[in-house]
Image (cartoon, rainbow, N blue to C red; front, side, top):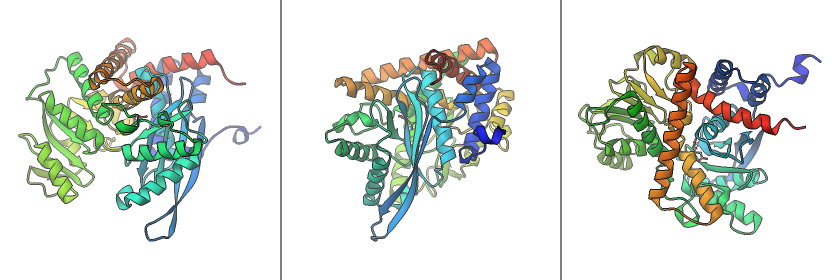
Amino acid sequence: MKPSQHELTKSEWENSELFKNTTHLFHHAARKMNLDPNIEERLKWPKRAIVVSVPVRLDDLTIKTFIGYRVQHNMTLGPAKGGIRYHPDVDLSETTALAMLMTFKCSVVGLPLGGAKGGVRCDPTAMSRNELQRLTRRYTSEISNFIGPTKDVPAPDIGTDQQTMAWMMDTYSQEVGFAIPDVVTGKPIEIGGSLGRTDATGRGVVYALMEAAKYLDIALDENINVVVQGFGKVGNSAARKIEKIGCKVVAISDVSGGIYNKKGLNLDALEKYVKDNGTMKGSPDGDFVTNEEILELPCHILVPAAISNQITEKNASRIQCKIIAEGANGPTTFEADQILHDKNVFTIPDIVANAGGVTVSYFEWVQGIQKLFWSEKEVNNRLWNIMSDAFRRVVQTAEELKVDMRTASYITSLRKLSRAMLWRGFFP
Ligand code: GLU
């Protein structure tokens, strides 16, 4: 047979920058650790990718059809887990890369879960609440055969929140005939959500930072200036927690750009300004900077907590921080990583730094199954243990194999996953 007849080669799966970058990192790590080539071959592709059309009656009574996805990358370690994204850039390839990142993320922090991601290509900021409800319910219904508490458990991501999860949970439950809260995580508390889930990703970023500072022997105090790209769920909660531990947030941005103030920002005032004006632009709290400029500001710690592909070979040499903690998924490209490594910038890679969200999602799922709920303190303590263990395991791999933190995080993840895959074997 010619290769084109029996091999999965070029497809829509491979088109996005994030897919190219994630697979590049994966193959690089595979080479460094001598990963079994059969395992490497298997993990290149998602287990399953579902594409659905989502017809929605808009408020003007016309029907518009959106395109939705759910990609399950790997389910060796347990049910697939990963968020649902509502964003104009959602496509099959990006969703697949994000699903792959979830597989590696769950494995590196030691959760008994596989990796998935889903989304609908839409602009949720331009849609009414009713339109979003209809979109969510129809999308859920279209993928309902493939999700479930023991199969695949969605959660919030960019453009979705606890209300989205409540609609998903309700739609799925209506179809089954009784309440199945464990089909999603990131739910409101009243229907089975976990305390501490909303700010878990941001909190986890800071827990990872605290471990990194300990490792690098840096005191996290008022002399440490932090720049945060992103003022959404992750950026906002990370910034607040950074302030709480005594560091100074000197710049933060949303999609419209950011605000820089050397003396430190007043996050409450900024949040109010954004609420009143819909944008950060024009805030009197500091100087306006673009989303490109914010990454290059002088600071000790940079937290990219917006979207992917922000730190690339074009701007990496101008980055001035000592530590990068990746709140977003895939904010740094493979080429940029090499430049940053040469500049001695210490990176806490996304699959470790932002794993707090999926970790507390896992706690929510566990609490739901046992119908016994924990205090916020218990959730946070358990989160701390998982984040600090994961960080230390990755540092240990980095030291052992003399590789950068990103490669070490993939290797740590792949060591566990590949052993599990070999135990189970390939079917048939
Ligand atoms: N969307 C989040 C992530 O990218 C959370 C996923 C989850 O909780 O399942 O990690």
